[in-house]
Amino acid sequence: MDLFNFNECIAKSELAKFDELWKIVPSISNIIEEVSKKLDLSEYDIINNNIYIHKTCKVCESCCIEGPCVICEGTEIRHGAFIRGNVLIGKNCVIGNSCEIKNSIIFNEAQIPHFNYIGDSVIGYKAHFGAGAITSNIKSDKTNVEIKNGKEIIKTNLQKFGSLVGDCVEVGCNSVLNPGTVIGKNTTIYPLSFVRGVIKENSIYKDSDNIVDKK
Image 1 (tube, rainbow, N blue to C red):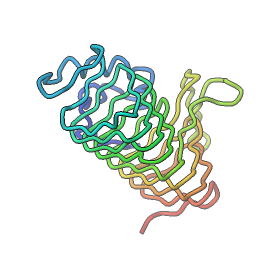
Image 2 (spheres, rainbow, N blue to C red):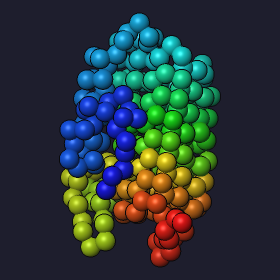
Image 3 (cartoon, rainbow, N blue to C red):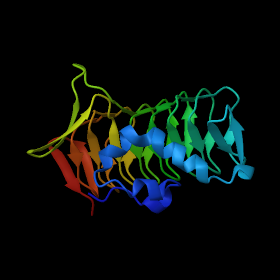
């Protein structure tokens, strides 16, 4: 499935090496390390030698940012946001009030603006999360996460893996993306949805039995 336009991420050359996109998740720390080596350091404020924040970013004093982390130009980090480390945030993004993000890559112009949790996930270009929508990244029985695509089951061998959310996806308010969820680009998820498995691109997800093509 063609989920992401890698040109809309500062780590495009690193991401292009992955033939299976879920394998990005356990490699995020290494990806950030490689990206940080290529930054024009004159354009970034550097904190504790592993947090790089572009000088054009708007970062609220009440947020908490742990490294390693790269935050690209024009991005806004709002009141009470918690960046827990191993996070790469692209250009002109919004990370909002009381949001928590860990071990994730956020592509350019994505918006995660209100009370969201993003963990062990990749969020595509111009994707938008409604208030309270979250990526669940660990199963209740703590067994490894699998990706289910119809009858096909992909074993990730990862205990923690959230979601791959494609470009221009709209996730409705208070939706839960279960571990191993993959959402194709340009898809809309209805509010209050409980999403699992692979959801095709250019569709509208109303519930697991009611997924329709966009016209």
